[in-house]
Length: 288
Image 1 (tube, rainbow, N blue to C red):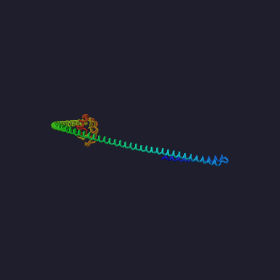
Image 2 (image 1 turned 180 degrees about the horizontal axis):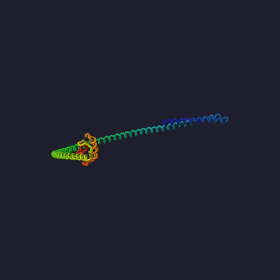
Image 3 (image 1 turned 90 degrees about the vertical axis):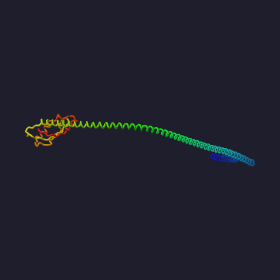
Image 4 (image 1 turned 120 degrees about the horizontal axis):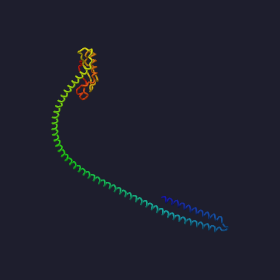
């Protein structure tokens, strides 16, 4: 399309150029004859001008033919080029189509290969799963057999252990009963010893308080009940008259004697013994 347009433009320019040349020749011929026109030669001048015009026409005709020939050749060349371009374009399109077809075939072949590969992998996976299931079943069967054997052995072992435990239980119960009897006897004996010890300590406390009591100026026959709170080792932390003698001086001197007697040497400092004989808080009747 572009080449044909350019050829047309160039042909037009050629035609214009030829007409310009022809016009110039005519003008030149007429101008020249007018300038150098000799006298008394009218016939020859006309002939000369006629000859020049004929030559111009021939030249124009020749140029026109050459131009048409060139245009024809150029058009033929352009047509040939356009034909070749069309053929090349068709060939290119054919090659492109062929390439697309080949790419499509390759893609389809690749897709088919991938599908076949996928099918093979799925088949292999199925076979592997079946093999795995078979192995699992065999393993499970073996485990069940082993479990059965172990269960029987465990049952026998448990029966033997139960028998042994029953024998040990009976033996332990007998030993426990014997120990309980011994403990009861020991506890009774210990309790009796603790009561005896407590009575002895209280008697010594009373004796020590009497020794520190000031009876001067007091009437005979007075007595009061005193409560004492002790620490291990015999220290007095509190002393109160819980039942008065009726004589305030007697009661105050009794408490003073208790404080002077602290700590009581007869009270044990061993905490276990101290708590066991229940000597922390005692109440006794004080009489001089």
